[in-house]
Image 1 (tube, helix red, strand yellow):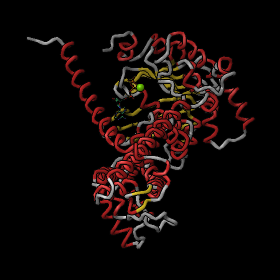
Image 2 (cartoon, helix red, strand yellow):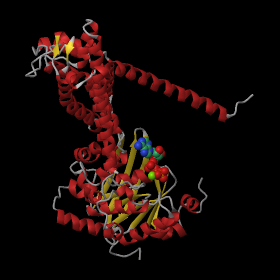
Image 3 (cartoon, chains in turn red, cyan):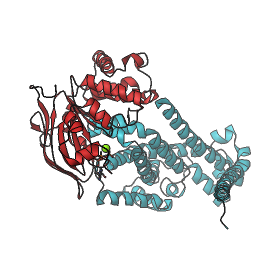
Image 4 (cartoon, helix red, strand yellow):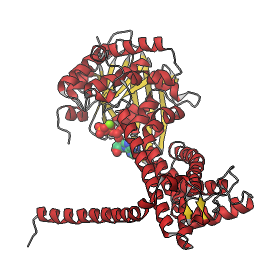
Length: 257
Length: 278
Ligand SMILES: Nc1ncnc2c1ncn2[C@@H]1O[C@H](COP(=O)(O)OP(=O)(O)OP(=O)(O)O)[C@@H](O)[C@H]1O
Ligand SMILES: [Mg+2]
């Protein structure tokens, strides 16, 4: 199944280096992200997973002192090309963060945030998008009668799904998830994982996770990173059953650290 | 012999507690002292009558007007200026030497004695710009005086907005300005309002900066170019010239109540705001 012929490279990372000041956090990263697949990035803490993920929608631009060389192509266009509009890029490549982070607004206002900043005013249209996005994030049934309630009153996993709905509302093509389940309990984690499997039919997903079972359960491709380098990148099954690098094997089998 | 941490903690709590108690006692003492002497003087007539005989008799009505107008003018001028500056400094500049110098400058300005602002206001607004002793000169001087405080408190409030809100906003395609308008300012508002109200509270009681710039006319002003007298200045003159100790305390008590009211409404506003958001 992983080797379907009609795969399409949504994102291609070429020789990407990132410096926090003098510190080189990413070293000549190469990565290909297939459309409608889930790509997982694993590796020990501090190896640069989040940094790499945040390169894919230029969130690192916000950090002072970051320097980036190399290329990230989205549908063949270099996103670090000066002519590209960052806000438009971020709408296409959205992000779900580690901690659920709804705005201190109502549920409805959270979902419509991205629409409003894009200039949408039409209430009917927004209502429809809110319903659709919440349905897609499996939250509609729980919140449909309290859309005007504060989002922070929801449980953590509902909040995280609200964040996903908020993202879906702007119709991204790629969803980046940085340890989206790390503040959730196992049942909520399962729910998000199932949701990811559902979402990949329409979206391309890249997920950073500390949880190797999670990577092996949900992802189609897995990259193992260590100290800023992409040690190995392959079909998930291969990484977990017959990794080609000794370093990967050590990590998978728990020998690391 | 090693003292058990429990006893050390008890000692520490005792010291911290007594410091707090002492602070509160001093505060209460001052307020009671003034109110005790001043409250009996306050009456509707005292508040609404014009002073007679330089304030020996009659009320303090014109000084109420002056005390409202000057801080109000300062508020109207200083808060947009201060808030915009703090937004610019914290959201639209990268931390570098220029911003550091600006911050250092505002910190220094905040620490300058108010009489210096009075002197500056006198030379610049009253004389150079020719506004004379007037509400305008006084209001501008007060504005300059509270500006650094407003900038710094607003900046603190803006910085206290969680970084994740900014990240999410950007990640949903919002521009920096949209993020400021929709996320940062609404969330920083309680802090900003508190800072503004507290500095206004400070300017209500300001004497030195005002006496040189707004003068001390007891007539009811008809334009911003008229001189006026604030309660603080009135109190100062009554006490200093030995005109009427009784009326001086009455004025002081009114002033304290006014400042308390402003501060209380600041907290009330802030709490209401926070309650509304949650
Ligand atoms: N803003 C920053 N400034 C300087 N160094 C940073 C910054 N962010 C991350 N780093 C460093 O870059 C390296 C990679 O960090 P990154 O957050 O990408 O790791 P990670 O793999 O996501 O780790 P974790 O699993 O703990 O989230 C780390 O050594 C980290 O200390
Ligand atoms: Mg990380």
